[in-house]
Length: 481
Figure: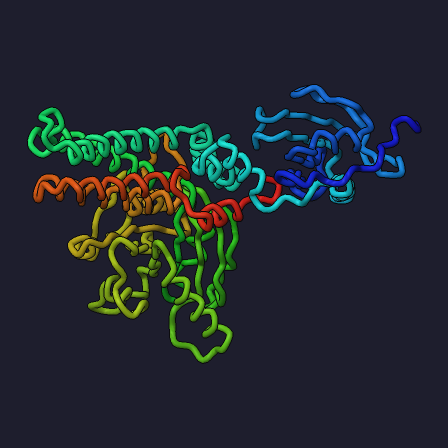
């Protein structure tokens, strides 16, 4: 046994980046727990930890992991990935032991004793980005794949991780660079006939093609953002309108307490569900009314806060009692919310529609009532449902998807808000370039607008990124990524 006792570690190398380490699997009980190392000393640390003199790249080796005094911490597999042929581009070691908080923490502590430093959030992925192993879109896709709430979102994240989204962006960047070269050459050599872009229409045609392509990618990105983030939906209405019952119907389980007592719901209740591929972050709220009950009043205040922050409002009302004589659902919405929300944010839900014969949906298509026709004339939409029987729930989900424009293609790509913002700024700059070209024929201003478009587009993959943007992106990662 004495020959297998690890030797004392040498001090970390002063030059270069520190070797980092972190637990790469969730803490808790499990079959396998992984501690990951990356950096110049990762290989030496693994040798000292195990008492072995060498490891073969990409070959699993069964080893025991030793404390400094020769006692065994754990046993398992060691995987060695020699840089630059690794995730980070550096030497990477993965120590696969038994899953368990005590064992993993003991192993990690021993790795720190041997010279490794605690990895920061997202530092493994940042090093991969810094070593050109992946770009920003691919780095973000790692986190998106981990956090995916639906199969469609996970598949989209993996496609982005494989580089499909980046390929689209890089193709657009090449087109923009090509356009800039032609425009700036024409500015520098105005007497050359073959670069007279102001009159031959070639640059205008290429610019318009690029604008069309940007709009296509932007539409795809919007679908990807919905896949990744979903939408925040708030259920609001009077007490006992059926909000909690609707939440339970959509969730497919009894998440909210439902009684005949008005004011049962006194606080917001959140539930996340995936319906038709769209992730809905549902919030049930206290019934909106005047009350002297202190606790209920606090719940109503929280409800109004949630309403202001919602992507979509579902105003639920009881068709058997909530509409007074000569009042309409839109008038009720105005009373409840203080003002009528925009049509794009409001979907009116007529609950207990099975109890009124003129609202019964007895076929595949609904029969609109007089009030529904009036609602549609003002650009709003009402869906008739019964939380008791489940009638109309499918129509509600379809209406929600249509309301937010959710119709992702089979090969959709995950996207974030910053991607969409960058694409919109790119589109705006291209529109300015088009105006300067076709209206003013101002070559210098066309070139400047194209430069701004290229900079905005380059932010997506990291070609033009400020350090604070990188820190924000990688800081949201897991420690072990």
